[in-house]
Image (cartoon, rainbow, N blue to C red; front, side, top):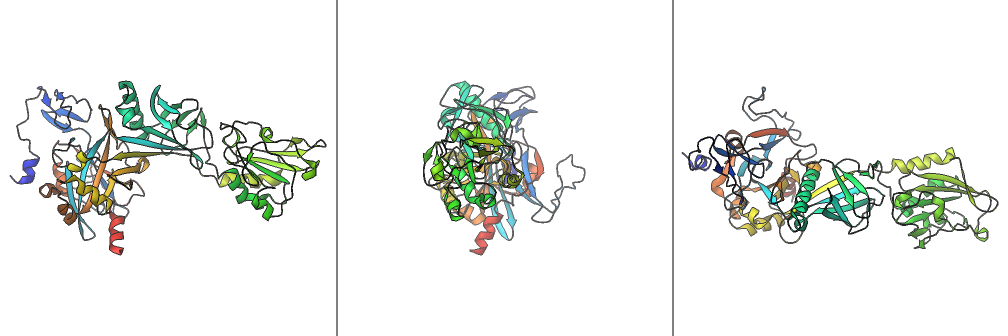
Length: 508
C-alpha cells in the first residue's frame, strides 16, 4: 500500500449499514443514519461510509486544443476510459472541504501544460464573509441609496450607488448571514445561493420597487421587463446625436433623471450653429444645456417620475427665440419614450403626430442601447483556514496570489482579486458552471475555489508535496469522501484557467 492509497482508504472499516456514523467534514459533526444526509445535504451515509454526494466536476477545455469532449463517466457509452483531446481541469465543484482546514485540501492535482509542471489545489470554501453584488441595467428608480433590500420579507442587503445606466445592490455579508435573526440569515443565504446559481429571485426595496433578478437575464421591475440600458445621460445623448437632428427640428430635449440635455444650449449644439429657442427648463442648471434635478427619480421618462415631459418646461421666451411653429423633439435616454411638439400662437407646445423625418434618429438611440441585463458577482475572502489547506504557512499563499504567481479560479472561471490584504475575490457567476454553489446551515455559502501555480513555486511556499496527485488518479480513484466524478464541457469563453497567465509569463 503506497502513501496515496493510504490517504484514501478509511482508517477504520466502514460501520455496518443501518448504524449512524459521524461526519467529520465540518465542525457540525453530524451523526448520519444509513441512506440519509447531514444537516448540509452535501454529505451522506452510503453503505456505512461518509460520502460527498455531489460529483467532482472536471471541465474539459476542448476548443483551445481542437479536441472533442467525450464523457468518461461509467454511463457514457462512447468513453473507453482514456483521456482524449480536451485538456481537463479539476474544479472544486463537489470536491468537498476540510473546514476548518486542519488537513490538506481535498484535491491537489498536478499536470503538465505547455511544458510547465503545474499544481492545482482544489477545495470548496465555506464563506460566511461573502456577499453578492447585483448590477441592474435600468434607468428606472428601484429605491433610494441605503434602502433595505428584502427577500421574503427579511432584510438581506441594501441599495448602493447608482452607476452609469445601472442600479446597484449589495446583498449578503456576514451581518445579514450571521448577525441578525435566524430567519434573516436563512433568507439571505437562500437568496444568495439562488442568485449565484442563476435562478430568479424576487427582491423588494423599502420605499422602492419590486425587482426580479436573474443573472444574465433582463430585470423585471414592478412587473415590467426592461429591454434597454440607456445610451448615456441626457447630455451625452445630445453630444452623440446632435448632428442627426440638425436641420430636422428646432429644439431637442433629452429627458434624464441625472442630466437632462437641451441641444440649443449645449456645447454640441453651439458648435453646430444651433439657434436659441427661448426654452426654459425647470431644473437646476449645471452648465449650458445640462440640467440636474428636473424631477425626482422614478419609473417614468428617463428614470424620472414624469409621464408628461412638458412638466419640466417653463414659459417660452419670445425675446430669446421662441416663435409660433417652433418644433420640439423630446426623447428619453433609451429612446423608448418620445414625442413631438410645435409652439402655437401663444407659445405653448402642442403635441403633433410624430414626423417620419425624426423616427430614424430616435431609432438610432434605441440601436445604440445595449440589452438590459442583471449581473451577479459573487464576492468573498479566502480566509486563513482555507489557505491552511493549501500550504502549511498560509500567508505564503496570500503573497503568492498578490505576486501573481498563483492563479485563482472559481469553478474554473477567472476571478478578480482585490488589491490590498488577504485574498478577496469577485467572480461573474455566469462564467461558472451551473449549480456551482452550495450552502451550509451556519448559514454560509459554499463556493468552489482553485489555486494553480508552478509545482516548484508550490513546494517553495510550503505546499503539501506528499498529497500531489495526477488528474488520471483523481478520475480513477476519486477523493477521500468517495465522491463520484462527472465530466462537463468548460463554459464557452473560459480558457483553461492559468493559460493566459502562462502566456503572459512566457512573454515577460
